[in-house]
Image (cartoon, rainbow, N blue to C red):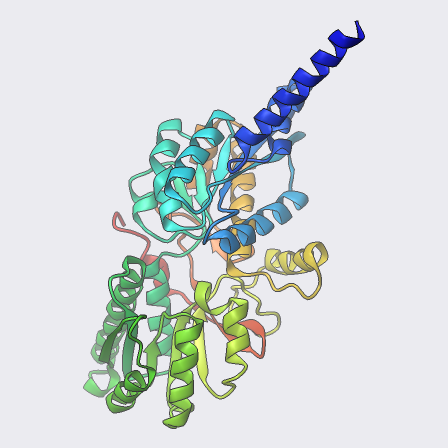
Length: 427
């Protein structure tokens, strides 16, 4: 009898180990257990699940982990809807196309009522057809490619598109800085950067035309005086800065990473451009720790960038900072340490969860279709990164926050409102 019981014990352990190995890379055993084991001993009407489809390994690991931090923080604060407990199921898409496909398929089989994810354009593109077929409302916190949401009624985003970010930077350059000459220095053959540039040039030219028409003076307008394509593998910072100086541009759109910006800033200082040019970038490149640390070596260089981390305590010029922003900042410090600066991805992960919880409350239903409809009809919801409404293509209709660095702190300095209209191809 003892031998028989021992055999049963060994077989059970073997089964559990095997299942753990199967789930590795897609979810943790604890998540698997909570869905397929613990769920059996509870009333299903008392628990619903939100799937979290994010990279926890591979090249996008940091972005994915930051978004998960924001999601888990929001979940710790808002985890109950009308007496029904909300739980998270997390899967790892590994920053890989094949793993992402397997991860989203496995997540859908777990029947979440909604999904958050993913960091990375490709990961979200891979998931899109599966999400549409399963009809599960999904929010990507940070993927900007319009194609992810344009043709999928169930996919939304919490972030701005490249078009909107570019338009926001153009408004800041023209309206706030009063620039008459702007330039662009960017890498070649990058669709996300191309979209940013398109939004920037289109909006800058439109604002210039409006100013000329309004004042009836040609001098009221501005122009794009420099477009410089760079190759990362053949990067010549001095040549780039020479071109900037020759163009007499007052603001430069510079969507480049830390290493390239460091070299350009150094050459700009040598050329005496530190007080003559403002460099414009995007938050997911410029609010990272590596960039912030590098920028401290160039204190006189003027910069501004789009950012949804909204760390503008006492410094914001607009209503970009909401009561939820303040709560996010306080609770983030409480959960992850007072010295932890939440990234843009963390703030967007937080808001993605808030948007879904709000939709569940509005729908008074946990049917995915009802949640989707309530999400699409959100109007003026105040979250950590701003005030949300959605376009027909699932893109937020809201202003773009422009920030700078005050030593090592991201500070909101401007809210670009005209960018809210650039929400997608169908609007």
